[in-house]
Image (cartoon, rainbow over all chains, first blue to last red; front, side):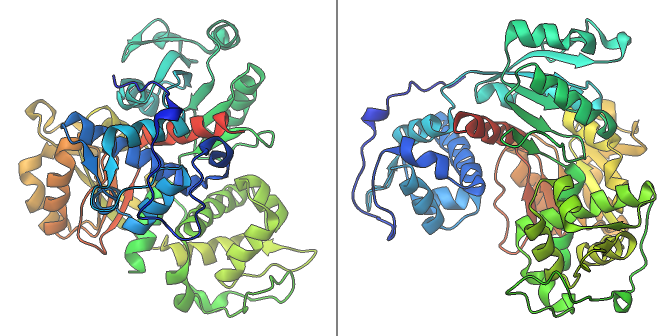
Length: 237
Length: 237
């Protein structure tokens, strides 16, 4: 697994390809809280592509190529990277390793996050087998289900336990994140339990919007809604 | 399955709770192409919640309750609904059935869409078993894999076929959508094949951004990236 040391001081800010309206201030700790959700999503994609470039031995890239890799314009790339204090050099572009480290520091990818997964149905199974989480520094501490036939089984390296053990595991393993892959009607109840147990953020796959205390970090992924958005785009091209 | 007839003329436009800056023009065919991607995503969520209300016998709702269900402010709900020509009546709100029909017409949910799924690994398996797609009018015409051991097996009611049969199925069943759950390194090649076969939109789960002709409708769902965005939010609360 790739892991970047956090060395913020080592980031060089260069002075060309400057985007009007950006101050060029390189202190990302003051700014990153202001990044919009779409901007964070794009940074996450640049980060993925930069790692691919690193793996294939590339040392430099530019806003045009990076934009082509994630389907956004070079101007958007420059604005996003400028907003975290990374400015490309005209004719040279960006150093891949330095830029990956910079984005990783902003996204918290140098940090090892612990997650639990609740609901080992077909989607939960797929998520437990998914190797992409580890690559970004997420480890699954445990998985839970209410079906006794599943208890003790290992799926993708994670042992399935009884949901009755949830509070005990939360208090000992102290995971920060919970992935909910439970049926809609159970999602709110499970969310309440994990939040009471100290979970700080929820990735919710149940097709229902959870009512949680304001300020709780939560991301909902509704697969049917994604397909509906796709259909809308086709209909309105 | 719920299915709404499309009767655009029956939508009543009422004149209170008006949002400044919106013209109140009810002709959504002129406007819906202008809806932003986040707005379409929210409409999809309102639609989901309205169906839940209908199923539980509720006949009216308002911007405050609808907003609480999907975690947005009442003002955002009113603006979104006003932009498709639906304006709530003060003290009464919105008729659930009429509003669901209206949003369904805008999103194209009265249309039956055919999809194929490519890549029957653990995620593909989960997607084939997922029942949420049918609810919104999507049917899976076929699934494809390159592992002969999987050919002929039924998963969630869909038969798995050899990827060699892809072009034949596309030309006979004429699906509009393709769901890609293949490894990253195969995604671009498969995307090229489905687009050549007449597919109009792609829902891509491979953690790579596909390079497709501009104008192609494509939605990327990167599960690791979602978790990374969640971690960012926790770190920057």
